[in-house]
Image (tube, rainbow, N blue to C red; front, side, top):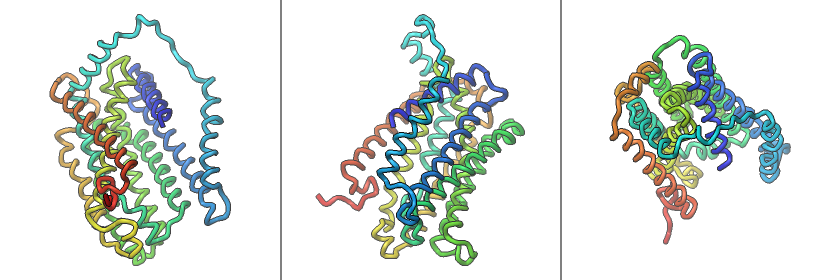
Length: 370
């Protein structure tokens, strides 16, 4: 996992470097290519996983041990041969600014209104992007979804995300100057609406419509992934635009860490919400599904709340973002730093608790009998 994170940061740093050096035909070109490659590879990986991990049902495929061995060998044959093609520029030691200067540059970046205000909205938006953590168990118990069906749902999700990024790059980005508000409002509403449609699956509404449960779930998941795909590039463009020169890697990693921690925070809250209604696996096996649709309704409505603040916090486009760079606020920078520290501690403590005491209610357990 450490290697994946390091590679991700290095890739982000290189992308930010190219953008800041204006080595692209139009704003967002490099980021869009990177994201399209990412989701194309995810699509291939999910389809391969879906096809190879269904041995118990098809009699053809790989065991769990064989799958892990295959995954261990895969980077050796795909990544290692590419090393000879990598180019690394070298810099003299006097070209590298001292550590104090680098820290001051990062602190100045956080003080800019373009940075702290945008990061606050994106963290708020992602922190309330809750999910129904019982949904996977519900599909298994109520509709007996197998490994291939789960894998194909993820693969189709990556496929439509790839399509969304392609459409944003070739049409929305070129046709609209300030599209970020409309993109987040429309996609946020679409995600909430189609999450609510999962309620129909609980009440067998798909049977009334004559749609098999699998295809109903796939369609619902695909539309949600398609809508979320339009949100990737605005976020990447915002973060790259505020990065200081020669600090691209650290700056981009810092900003994306805040939003990633917000994602992780949303997962922990989603797990806690399992205790609101009886939606544990044991409850579902007894046919108690009422809590599932209630939890779906709650998480879908909560995700709409950040959209009320979009006009106050999120810039309309890159022009407005550039204008906001001139305004500085020490308090804004301190608040972003506080978000990072609190989010990191929260996620670390909950992750450790999930390992040490998985029965604890804070991580979605039944409660520990001490």
